[in-house]
Length: 258
Image 1 (cartoon, rainbow, N blue to C red):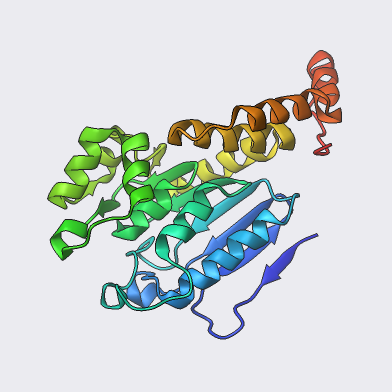
Image 2 (image 1 turned 120 degrees about the vertical axis):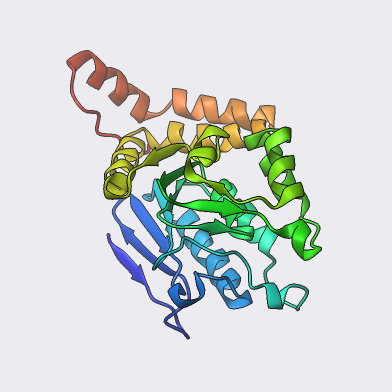
């Protein structure tokens, strides 16, 4: 069943749309380069939790509106009291049940660089750029963000981005592994659609299980017993039998997530 979750109090809060196995969260402050406020963080946390509670959703897209993807958290609000912290929202996105894809059609700045990095895939268009100005602002970044940069981009690249606040272009973003895919702007949606189609066609138990444990391995927090349980769940599933049958019959599998 398709669903649209509309903001309850402001039309510029992030919006969630669900169409079958694919959910999309869209940031909606284009006039401010999709800058995030405390209200946005609270909303994002709720939307991620809503997607986690929908087992039929296998892929979650994160998009921005207007020219930019996102310019991070409102600098003027740093230090102010808020119900949901930035680190918690990004960590929730990283550990979301569905496979996550950041669609980077425009610039990615500040905390938004970590928001996108928390996604499983980052598909970007040529012409975009990114930078992390924390040191320029006098801000010491939070632990999980530093760990994400190091584990996903390597120590040298993490140091270059954090300690110099240099802006890098799309080609450099791809070279250091920040972008998993790079496409010309007119082909961005085609690349995203192909990635979504591939992920959404996989067996749900194996797909979400491996996504979860791969992230745990990268963080050094793997739970061997939980991994064994996931492996056994997939081995005993009806989906494995269907996958075997489809492979033998040279047809597309019809997985049920059971």
